[in-house]
Length: 263
Image 1 (cartoon, rainbow, N blue to C red):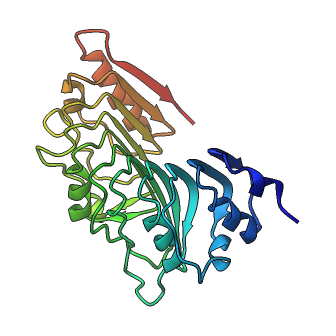
Image 2 (tube, helix red, strand yellow; image 1 turned 90 degrees about the vertical axis):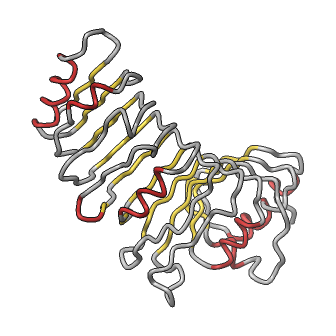
């Protein structure tokens, strides 16, 4: 019996609240006009249905949420060269023979927005490379060293950076001058740092700074960033709240807006 979804040959947008059937997933990826796909559940079971099939180039531009669990998953991504937006999860089952290996995604040359959740306590992230086309990057539950933070800072088009529940080596993050030249939005959620080094020389175009569950005071140098229009502080310590208000008081104009939401 032919599935109704299988007859939608001209379908371009697909939103599925929850997915459990691998055959169903296998079927939709053969829709040649499909451009945007969103699954409320993690997509991982479809590869069992196409394990021995060749991957043909598809026209997908946006995909979420994609579970990277097997080598076959990367093969599928390699067959999706036109992806602009990708939200994915890295499973703890990824490549158990190489527990410190992180799959590189730099072959996605058109990717502009990338969100990755690490669901792998035994894996240490090793960001060898990222697509230089990225404009928006979200990393959740990552362990990052200074070399990786520098690589992120040197992404030439990056405008939005969100670090969530991430661990930065030695709790030290010291951006260098010349990094984050295009960054406009920075969000730090539950990031433990001894000092927040944000200033006009390393974030010259920053417009919004969002801190959630943050414990380190905001340096006064943040107030010197000429493009800054908003500081949002939510569920942070009293020290963070007071430093945000002090920056606001020191402004000579009324362009900056400070939002504080306490526990």
